[in-house]
Image 1 (tube, rainbow, N blue to C red):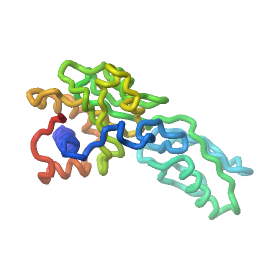
Image 2 (cartoon, rainbow, N blue to C red):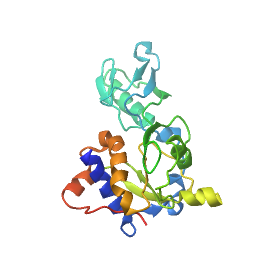
Image 3 (cartoon, one colour):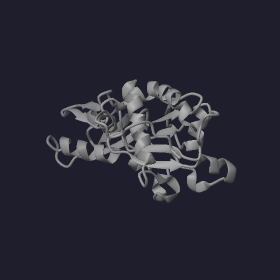
Image 4 (cartoon, helix red, strand yellow):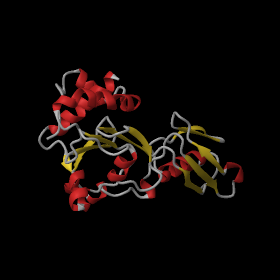
Length: 240
């Protein structure tokens, strides 16, 4: 729990520094959109279909193991975690080429189970949600039970790209509800962390306590955590 708390301290401290977090409206359009199928990264629990032309014995559906690997005849174990399906195809083609001349390999996604986003902070139910299609930040907040009375929603923090080197964006959820601001309506992507900050420093302790249990399994050993331990993020930062 301590590691998750320190991570949030670090992220909020980084975001509160001038220029550290970009409002989503000022980011590239692609930051607000859903990635194309070609951009989806494969991870544990995802199921993929592998077809090798004229080699039915090598054609099969496989599920990515918890360690991010798949087992494949002739080749053995391959690490596919974090790779797109086209990258997996290239990896398989290269490996099969050791045994067959000019193999024709097709890889397709059968089922995605690793497209998760995390919603924490001043929401009713801090949650880990599975993306099964398009999901906006508003839909995610709704699935987490909605925001509570302590929330500051004009500066919701979106952490993207993992905890090692995250991109930080702010989202003005207030303007989505009050003005229908389409430039704030970001579509979530795999690995996104949405942090709804507390309105006042008085609620900071409860805020971190509530989110720690959700974040802890995902952030142990992260760079932000190590930075916090070394004194890189001091104190508790609350977004303005």
